[in-house]
Length: 458
Ligand code: F0G
Image 1 (tube, rainbow, N blue to C red):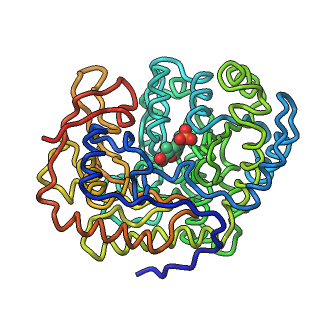
Image 2 (cartoon, rainbow, N blue to C red; image 1 turned 135 degrees about the vertical axis):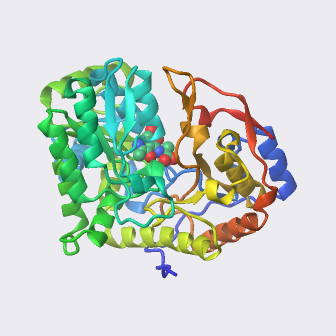
């Protein structure tokens, strides 16, 4: 089992955790329509819904907040952030946005026309939905290994380069306004993308004059995996690896709520000056003036610090080992997880765990409900609730290949004892898995239904 390194920080501020009984949780989840997004956070014992915006900021970040310049235009905080973005990524132009999906919205509004395709290794839900909202087609071209949860692969988030080539040949480069890759690949296990693969992806896009944008939410965890697993990178600093990752891209979208460890914030960066002009106009319409985007000056300050802190070698070693530790405990108990453990989360393979529940009855959602009832663990479904949708041509339901429950670990928030409690709860649920029932949707919106859909037990 992976050693659990001690947390490389001391705890200065604490937040109490409320205790709830099983009966109270049964009532809460039924009242929430069996949708964990609708449960009150204070009714969760360990909240692993997401690692997004849930991290604990450092004393340095909190003190930077007091330096926030709240001027409408040209705030000092913007220039502090600009320096940080340039140092960390090397990209010359950027705008702050209120979070990652706002960056995606702006990028796709200025680039995607109806009917056009945006390939990636695998788009996350908001990226997927923002492309569809423009009439575009999100296309996932990740390597085949990603669809096999038990398969070991050091860079399971890699783009399938041959498939990408074939895809571009089939639809034509002029129908692809932008090409992407997500680091790490959140949708299939927080799996990293190798430097070699980033380089090859960039090569293919560039040969076809397609601008290459990285979805860089977990840029630092990806760099850490490259350092640990890819030949030639063991002696390099995280800072140098991060710079190299970005050197292949024409731009990036970033939810800064992940590796940049802020509670709110995002970035949209690029090299092209003309695109930057169009982006700024769209930003002013939707987010705010280009020197603050959708953020307050103090948020820009916290982000400027967080971008650098997220690359700390000791912190990343602890972070990735913490995730692996939880994975080891579940694996040892015979719970099928996505292998190998990724950066920010452990993903339980609900299809293997609950073979008696068909995809149309949402096995991963059913498992996440069971984990909540058993121990107040809040997780998120990454399966058919999130990703199944009707084929626009035939109306037939298109199901994703995997049904996963993600246990996302907030940064610098939970200790080893919390993760042991999580593991014990998972083991208890696994022992009673035959009694878990499927779910039926009784209400759903048009896009991103997992946030607000309601269910009943089958
Ligand atoms: N891209 C990736 C890879 C993400 O994981 C997310 C968010 C986004 C973009 C959108 O960013 O939330 O700041 O608007 N993922 C969160 C999650 C919500 O739980 O994984 P956002």
